[in-house]
Structures are given as structure tokens and as C-alpha cells.
Length: 106
Length: 106
Image (tube, rainbow over all chains, first blue to last red; front, side, top):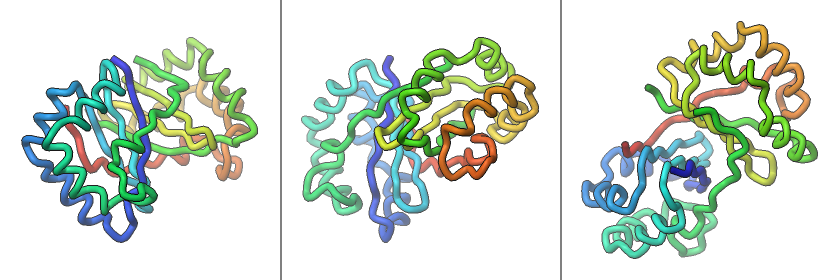
């Protein structure tokens, strides 16, 4: 398993709605994530909207592509994209660049 | 277990040295972390020095305090504090404020 961390930026004026949506993610979206290999997946939010994703996955790019090809994700991302800054119309998954892991203690 | 994410800022001119130090953390520092309950602990570095910590821990504040009281940590933090920005002489652990977790998929 690889540990992956990525960052996104939520619009500061939409934080409450972003939180509410993620407290009630569609069951079919959760199933799609599970089916495509996302495990121990968390999202953390800083008060200014910086969003930190952490996920454990065998092959991040493969799991990302599998989600991008999943029909439920297209519907989810269409609803989510207005929440993000600096994505100029693209889906959040296009901006999920893994950061460098510099330390790990099991 | 609680999942905790926190942020720190490494000085951009010291990233290479920060990486090198964390590729060779002292064994007694790793033991101290284990003894005080830090598990699945990763540090991720953005190219501008933003440092993302992720750790799974039963009680984050208790584990943080236990590390702060650990003699090896005082020596480690004395070496590390010059690597961090905006800490005005304080140790990194003083700035490790947990972010809000807004989503989790096991």
C-alpha cells in the first residue's frame, strides 16, 4: 500500500456546504471508492479552505483513473467542482497531485 | 484510534537538509514515538515547504505531551526548530494543531 497526500482549495465562502455534503456522501460514491481501491481515506479542512486528502492505495494513479471513469464520479464531481478554487472548470481529481512523503513510522 | 492531520512550515531554503534528517531519524526518536502512541505517522512535504503530518493515535494531546516530556525529543526539537518558519523559537510540537476531519472512508 502506498500512502498518498494531496491538497485542494475549497472556496472559503462554501465551507459549510462542503462539510455538509461530505457528512452525507452518496452510498454509491462510497461503493465506487471502495471498488477502485481507496482505503483509509480522509479529508481534513483548514479554516481557510485548504483541503488535505490522505489515502492508502495500491496504485494511486490507477485508482484515480478508475474513479474518473466511474459514472457516479462524473455526477459527484459535477456537483463538487463549484466548491473548489483554481480548477477553472476541471474536476477536482485533475488537481490531486501526490506530495512527497519524507517520513513514515509504521 | 483518531486520525490527526496537522500543518507546519519548513523554511524553503532548508528543504534538502530537512529531507535528509527525516530519512535518518534517530532510532531512539522512533522508539520514543512508538512508546508514546504514534502509529502510521507520515510527513509529506510540498515544494514550498508546507509540511503535512498525518498520524493515528488514541489520544493526540496525550501523545504530544508525552513526547514533549521525553528527553530525546528535547534534543531532536533543538536540532529541528531552525528548520521551521513562524515558530518564533518555540518547538514544532507547539504548533501542531489538529485540523478538522470532514470525511473518512475506512
